[in-house]
Every structure is written in C-alpha cells, then in structure tokens.
Amino acid sequence: MFERVLSFLRDLPAGAGAQTSTDDPRVAASALLYHVMNADGVRQDVEWERFKAVLSESYSISGAELEALAAAGERADNEAIDLYAFTSVLKRHLDADGRKAFIGLMWEIVYADGELHELEDNTVWRVAELIGVERHDRVEARRKAAAQAPGARGTSSDE
Image 1 (cartoon, rainbow, N blue to C red):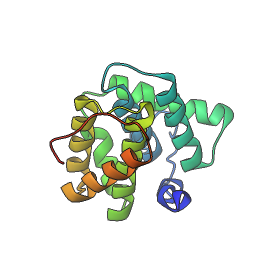
Image 2 (cartoon, rainbow, N blue to C red):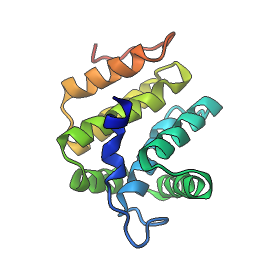
Image 3 (cartoon, rainbow, N blue to C red):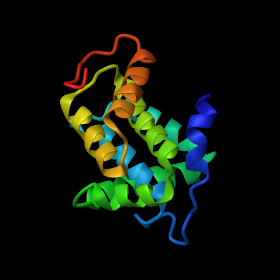
Image 4 (cartoon, rainbow, N blue to C red):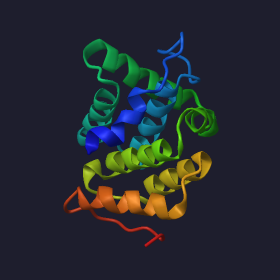
C-alpha cells in the first residue's frame, strides 16, 4: 500500500536541470517536504531521516543521488520567496490522487517526531490549498499519519 501511495513521485519527469531547477517536480517536492520539516523551527534527526527515507522510497534513489536531491530541496526552499513556485509545479505534474498522496507524505514528515506544531499544520494547509486538495482529504491524511505515529501530540482546528 505504501508503495502505491508513493508511486506517483517515481513517475514525475526529471528535467535537464533536475538537480538545481525548481521547475523539476522532484526538486519542488523535496523543497516542500523540507519546508514542512523545518516549519516549527526545530529540525530533529528523526525528521531528517524520514525526509530522506521518503525521497529514497519515492524515487528509488540512494547514496550521492539521494543526498543531491535532499540538498537541492533544502537549497530551493532556502532561496524561495513563497511556496507557490513549488506548488504550481506539483499541481501541473500530479493528478488529484497524486496531490492527495503528497499531502499524506507531508503529514508523515510532520508526525515523524510524534508532535504536531501549529506552524506545521498551517504549512500543510497552505500547500493543500495551493495544489487543490480538499479540506476533508487533508484532514483524513493527517488522521492516518497521526494514527501511524503512536504518542503523537497536538491538535488542529480541523478536528
């Protein structure tokens, strides 16, 4: 099942400037995942490991290729003015199910540390709005991720 949820990312095309271009859907996805990981201002090892695991599983990459994509996402996020540059790329390249699955991946990273911070919740909400994921789908994805993270703390106004 997890493989099916992540399969949409594998099918995203890699552009010629895949390692540095925010127009590359893989870099856009990496940047958004990196952004939500850092939304609360604290990057824990467990979050970083989950971030890299999602990238590795999504693109069937490891080693230097994985490190390059993680670094490209970090760099793109740090240089970005807003989230639109990334969300517009994903919206063009993903169908509705792919966009819902991506929001699920964001929640997995949010709950990697077992906590939900209001800034993380807000970030996922903004990304979901920008890529066209309905509120009920976002809330359901959050509930699934929270259920898979025993001991998760935090609530949201969506409940």
